[in-house]
Amino acid sequence: MLNTITNGSVAATSYFVQFSTFSNTDCSTGPIDSQVIAFIYTNGQLVTATVDPTLSFTIAGVATAQTVNGATTNVTTTGTTVPLGALTTGSNRIAAQDLTVGTNAQGGYTVTVRYTGTFTSGANTIADFSGTNATPATFTAAGTPGFGYTTNDATLGTGSAGRFSSNNWAAFTTSPLEVAYNAAPVSETTRVGYQAGIASTTSAGSYSTTVVYVVTPTY
Picture 1 (cartoon, rainbow, N blue to C red):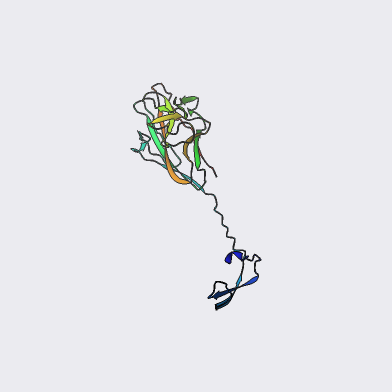
Picture 2 (picture 1 turned 60 degrees about the horizontal axis):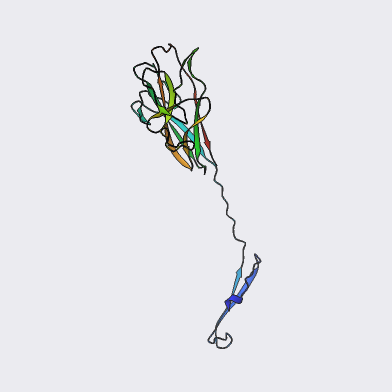
């Protein structure tokens, strides 16, 4: 009976097995064939490999007459500059940039945004828009001071996932806040918009601030 055979287990040791056939079920009378076979056990081959973590992040400019979360741009940007140009009370200036993230992190990634301070010219400032990252809102009409951002990512990882949908905007802050998110390895592009408006009483000057994006993978 085959179930009475005990297999060997010592690696690199030669073993022999003998096969015999008989014409009688007693396996002793009426021999037909007989063969001896040699074999050797091995421990098998351990195969290993590593996959390095990957992360890429690029920012590209967006031309005029492009859509950003329901608004239409009237400013052309580059990957490093957002030149809003001459602000007027007749219409707000709207710009956008494309943020592309690629990562093999199993937990995906988060992109946050912050600015270094209020949109300022000397002692003068353009007020931040009233909407917040947690509760973005429709941007104020032309003729009202305001500076803020939007994102077309409808699957954010904190708060209400699609809170920026329907052309909602938020004020920049000096604390990093989420504008793009994915919970899995991915390569994708998120469009972030900028909007600024002034009042007739906004002081003349050259206004500026610096916007900082940070991408964080979750391995």
